[in-house]
Image 1: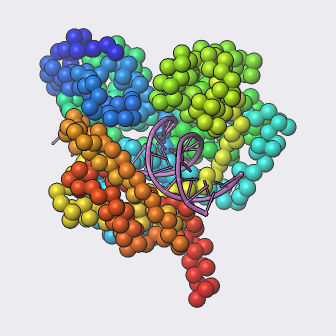
Image 2: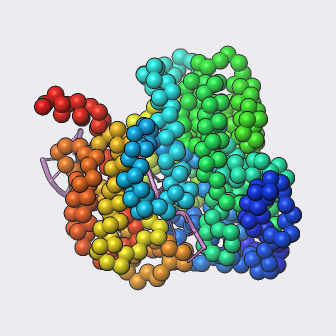
Image 3: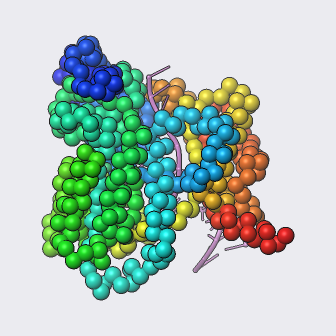
Length: 506
DNA sequence: ATCCTCCCCTAC
DNA sequence: TAAGGTAGGGGAGGAT
Ligand SMILES: [Mg+2]
Ligand SMILES: [Mg+2]
């Protein structure tokens, strides 16, 4: 990694207030009064979340982030996003009063990009299954018939979504390096969520414009995005608020490339944000094609080009291969898909397990038998907080836990499900770990989780309180050492069905 | 064999 | 200041 301090020292950076004020004034203001003074770039110390999901702090501290890091470590460094499920019904309002208490515990989440990414995924999935309520068996007849006709998959992903949406009314910024962050001063430890392509390509951190999040706008644009997709295709799998797969096999006789172009043009016209698309005959290749087409482009991978495409592709580019697997493969001198192809399936399965080995073997050859799933069953519902968590005493902790239970209870009711298995996860400061460099971060932690399965599914606050408390006590942790708490329910059952059965039994 | 629990890893 | 959430998949190892 290049240390950019020497390059960037003293160069001007514009503060987010510039954009905010510009919006207020309804025009672009001069940058000059908003430039940050000398030394601003020093604030780029360890501002981003570690690529290695592990101990993000307490690793070797970085004095400055480079553009390579900017690209690699932002949420959208490789572009992606997602959606969620709760508050689906009108009676959510009736609950919102008591929800306020829970919101207190989870209050930081209203500013959490990761919270929204998670919530939006469920909400859009939900939205979609409502959308095609008639066609119930939309997931059926896929795999078995897939050989009869060659499937055509289109993958669409908005380009650097979090940035594009915020600056969509400011075309003057399109060609300037822009990033999204909470912090209006880059001195601190705020993370950069997304950076546009000029920012990624740029060699220097100078002139980087930082803009704030606009969560309302993300939702608005995501709605527009999905409305457009659904106009062109009824087999849509929502991956996130800005990313989806379309199964175009039955959708049209037209050239899918032409359709992808039309979709992208309509998105661009409607949202003033660009999208990229990949077209191939399975989901894996379509997704890889999108990646290679960004920004504002599209790519078709015909079967005969697959091997060429994969041969030099880094294994990390494959979905399912993250940092850990990448390192393990690297230690065996495997960096590209072409190299991975030289390992037998048996060897991979022995080394990485049956399913993972199979996945590696197939993906590095461009083989992917997954089908586009328009509806996906929810298997767990939960909430967790790992930022800003510090407790003085047991009362503090118990208040927090109650509020967490309230939040989870409301989410369960919002999804109309109840669960039988309750899992409590607690992050505890690792012995010897310092206060983290990241402001209010959880730092280097030991994670403990324990679950309890009950005979009858519940969404009841009192039950959740009792069980989560009981589990926590079994950990024997000093609350002063707690840095994160999560509560999740699984083994879900339909709450409506449950109620009906209860009525019948009465 | 199959299921379950407690992780870890991954994606968005 | 800053807002490190949410959910799914799978492996290891033990219980059945
Ligand atoms: Mg994207
Ligand atoms: Mg990967």
